[in-house]
Structures are given as structure tokens and as C-alpha cells.
Length: 185
Ligand SMILES: Cc1cc2nc3c(=O)[nH]c(=O)nc-3n(C[C@H](O)[C@H](O)[C@H](O)COP(=O)(O)O)c2cc1C
Image (cartoon, rainbow, N blue to C red; front, top):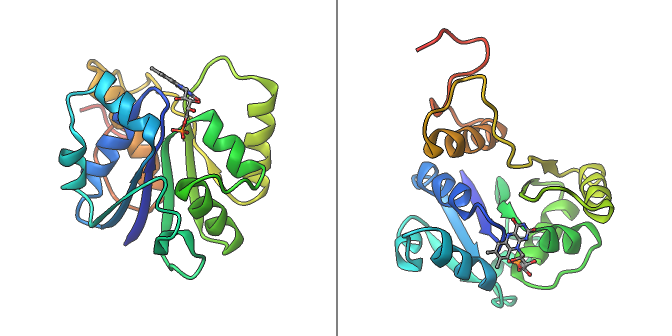
């Protein structure tokens, strides 16, 4: 599978990192925003080089002349995880500010799968409306909202739940959390 994964500067960059680890055997084109770089340093022990090692190709947000900025770059899905409200606002309003927003807008214009994973609470009206706009435009809006029915114990369990939800949207099998109707482990 050919996947564009973008990590932006919202809290919860670990969601994107865990997802990257899970899909490392796919063909992953990784874009990390400048603000995400700061948050990765702030919230995790991962370096940029650690993350680059999991991807086939790595891009910075200002590489607007790269192939990912073109609708003719054919891929299976783009995921923005976590997706800052700023990045979400740009996409929802057609503002191709950088490589991430441009690639996402291309995704929508070409009818490809776009999954955005916002993380913020509470939500302002503009962001709620932006989510609706994205949904109407064909994106999958998958907020980072952990559940508790599978009795998570560690932070990793909460992270894995969201990553599992994203993998399900990609039709990738996983055993990252126990589904509601599955037998108790
Ligand atoms: C420590 C920290 C945590 C942040 N957490 C969030 C967040 O959870 N959600 C969000 O939408 N923005 C968050 N922000 C604000 C974004 O980083 C900011 O809007 C930035 O412009 C996003 O840029 P980007 O989307 O290009 O990465 C946070 C900023 C900092 C410094």
C-alpha cells in the first residue's frame, strides 16, 4: 500500500509515531511539519532520524515542489495524525499553505482516501464547522478519542486504540485492542 502520513503540531504526536511503526512495511511517504518537530521533541524520546528510518521517503512541509504536491502522485491513502486545528482549517478552506495541506487537498480533488485525526478539546465552532466541511468533501474525520470498554491499563493501550481505528479505515488487520464484541482476553 502507498500511504502518505503527515504528522502536524498537535499534542499526541505519539499517535502518528505508533501508526508509522505499524505501517512501516507499507510504502510510506512521511511529512512532518515544523511545529510537529518541536512537539515530537517535547512529548517523546524519538528523534527525526528514528522516524525517517520507518519511511520510504521523508519530506519537510516546505518541499512544495515535491511529487506529493501533485494530484498525479497516485497513492492509496493520506493520513494526518495528529492533525492540528490549523492544518484542518487550511484543508477545509482550500488553503494549500504547505506540502501537507496541498497533498491533502489533492487527495480530496482526486477522490482519494484522506483520514484526519484532530486532537483538541473543547472545540471551537470554526473547527466543528471545518470538520463538517471535510466530511462533506469526502474525508474521514477520526478524532483522537480513546475508549475504555476494552479496559486499557497503560498509555500505550489508549494510543493503540486510536491507531487500531485508523488501521481499520485502511483495511489493515491488527490486534492492537480488543473490539467491543470480541472475547475478553
Ligand atoms: C505543546 C503544544 C501543544 C499543542 N497542542 C495542540 C493540539 O493538541 N491541537 C491543536 O490543534 N494545536 C495544538 N498546538 C498548536 C499548534 O502547534 C499550532 O496551531 C501550529 O500552528 C500547528 O502547525 P502545523 O499544523 O503546521 O503543525 C499545540 C502547540 C504546542 C506548542
